Amino acid sequence: MSLDIVVFGHILNPISDKKCEYFKNGAMHLKFSKSKDAYQIKQLGTKRKVLQGLKGEFQEIDYSEQVIIPSFFDMHFHWVQDDVREMPKANLLKWLDNYTFPAEMKFKNKAYSKKRAKDFFKRLVSVGTLGGACYSSIHGHTLENAMDEVTGDFVIGNVLMTMNSPQQLTQTKTEALSLVSKYSKKYKQKYALTPRFAIATDPETMKESVKIAKKNKSFIQSHLSETPNEIEFVTGLYKEIKGFEKIKTYTEIYKKVGMLGPRTIMGHGIHLKPSEIKMLKETDTAIAHCPTSNAPIKEKGLGSGLFDFKKIERNKIRWALGSDIGGGPILSMFDVIRSFVDQNKKAEVKGATHIMGLYRSSLAGAKLLNLDKTMGNLSVGKEANFLVLPKLRNLDDLSAETVLSSYINHGRKRRKNYDKMVDKVFYKGKLLHTPA
Ligand code: GUN
Ligand code: FE
Image (tube, rainbow, N blue to C red):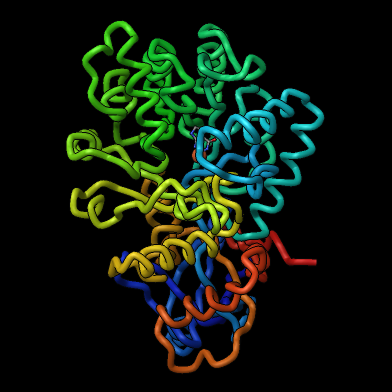
């Protein structure tokens, strides 16, 4: 029998864009579920109330002076781009050619890939990310390495590249499809069919692979409308391809090959025409918004532009946040939240709060993966996946928004500090990570 656990701390529980519960001097009662091999949250509230409802023996874990938040979901990142996060960025297509493709080529070596996977996924836990959607390179073993080394609840895919790519990263259609067939069958709903983007994946491969993914209930992810020169290039390209002569937009290409739908997550979607928004809405396709990647070049982003989250909200398109490592330079979702809030503030767009940033980095991500019934925040009944943050001074009488902004401001001087912002990581109620 595993003893029940009671965790004490100041607890933040994101509920929606506008609502985040805050239990100052709070507690969580965790109970072990044998069938799930996980501790689940039995009660959440103030310390006094939770203790009142407790009977029998239990173990106490005391983080009384610290803040507890749910673990993060990062809904768009490339685990094989760890080395290019801080490489010079002029624009997307140049950065891909000059730095990203050469970095991904190196993963052809199996020993190298395994070693890098062990290192990367360990660091991912240490920044508190325990869920999300991840891109590997074209190589089958980089997908397997990621699946083997990852801790948490992720969908992962190998990128498909069959055209307009460097020779060492170009697959035949047959190679691409046989990888999809093998891994979609093997990993089912943990697999994400991942045509890199319509520039690099031919339409026939996209169309055929979608059929395989749908049969196995796998997810689908790709890049959409990240930069204007990418859009110009892709629409020009497809006008020369038989069957696509009449396409007017980038989104239309994906629609035509069957890629849009409720299990599809498109990265970026910054520069969308009204007709494209309509297509995304009608197909219930989701968007992963990656503010640190889209940020100006002087902020180490690709300068792709500002995502109009209000327009996406108005159209009821589901969306969540992602780091887009290595388009974004920092692994921690704290930095992604910071950038989301800062960029909107600077552009005088109202409503982009830290609460919203936290919600879009946790529960909203879990929702895109249909995992929100069992994870994504700290509500009763969910698995105990949470982060303990270091003690900060003066947490008395603050709101959820000010507590969160204190942490964000604390790391602001040096963005890399966000990667060290998490003191303890619990997954399914078990302690995974304590910094050295
Ligand atoms: N579009 C196609 N490939 C990529 C990539 O690796 N990163 C980003 N940010 N955009 C892309
Ligand atoms: Fe990306």
